[in-house]
Image 1 (cartoon, protein in one colour):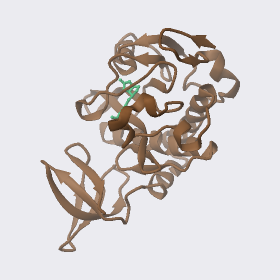
Image 2 (spheres, rainbow, N blue to C red):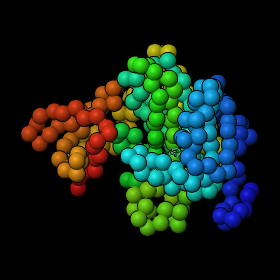
Image 3 (tube, rainbow, N blue to C red):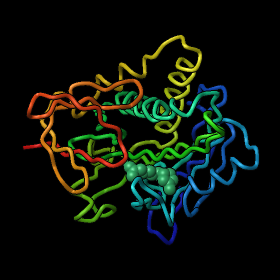
Image 4 (tube, rainbow, N blue to C red):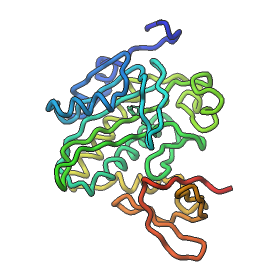
Length: 273
Ligand code: BTN
């Protein structure tokens, strides 16, 4: 246990904390641990250029400049969550990039289920529990022509954060495993459970033996067949998402019954009342 200036007690999330639960071959085996870092994604992107192996993981107890999607920041208090980035070197084309985020999302909901937490995926990659965000994914890639040189998969899991960690504004839209279950979780077990699922779904996909991740990704959707506001350039349109395609696109039915294919990036979704 560490009691430090942040008045937080935690068991440091070092390799020895995850090793007893880890069943993977490569994912998470080259383990780099920090107490404080700017952003694990930024650090991992630099490591990728140094030829670090596939599966390398960067974990930090705290980030001072955690990055979210769309240029947002990601709060990453000391010892409370799991803030990490995985370096992947898959042999795949750039068009398959969205599948890595789908695989990660499926592995996350499977992991939450093992801890009796019912999580849903809000397309494209927000993980939702009790109608609030519990986890975020930031996938960044370096391309080499039409193929992928490497991917940095950054994930933040709100594990033992409480109301004080979120503050009132964030508390309305974000949650944690602790808030959802009213219990404190062993972060080593949580992280290795995710890594085990991730490697299984990832290997299955790359070896073409199964796409079980995709069924989970669709089955656990938070928005399919519900009325949502699709917001593009600040303008909302009421639509019903009816399917998700394996290339990551969302099929939505508009009010005039026409069907449109939406790609993430410029749009955001809100459940309509
Ligand atoms: C989102 O906005 O939903 C994505 C959040 C991703 C946060 C994680 S925390 C670990 C990794 N390092 C970062 O700087 N960001 C990601």
